[in-house]
Amino acid sequence: QARRGSAKVEHHVRHSRADVYVGTSFRYWLTGFQTGDLVYWERAFAMSARSFGLRAAKDVCRDFSQWVRLLHERSRRDLLVSAPTCPIFGHDECVAMALIAAYQNKECPALQICAMTLLGCEPRDDVCALSDSLAQRLSKFDHHLSEDALSHVVRYADFGPVASARQIC
Image (cartoon, helix red, strand yellow):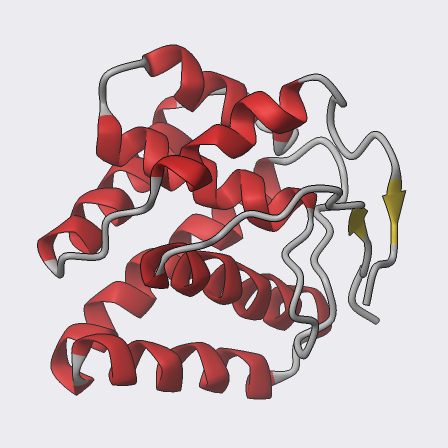
């Protein structure tokens, strides 16, 4: 059974196409790892193929799956995602967006470390390397995350890791 739940989102954020791609992909890959159900990975691949084309989707999905698996394995807590059909992104999905946005931005390494910490991960070399690799691959395909995605780190830093975890969908 997948771990569902998320800190309540009390603000409206207008996510870009790239933000939605990262949040939804994170949700699908993590749900697949947690349940072992291939349908979620198939959804992630289909969404990637629509966004990047079939050939590029293979590389993007490889990077994405490795990144989510590593976060899942390295986190000191259970990462939580909303139900696959939920229209609202929760805490961990938003922080995952912020982590990739921080690596695309490259102006503030502290935001990268803060996002990893909010996901319950130590800023280890392997986590940093995969986060940067995915961020750069998405940039190569003009999938640049928004300033709103980056601001999730600041928004959630006040609450700590999943301060008010509960299922929202």
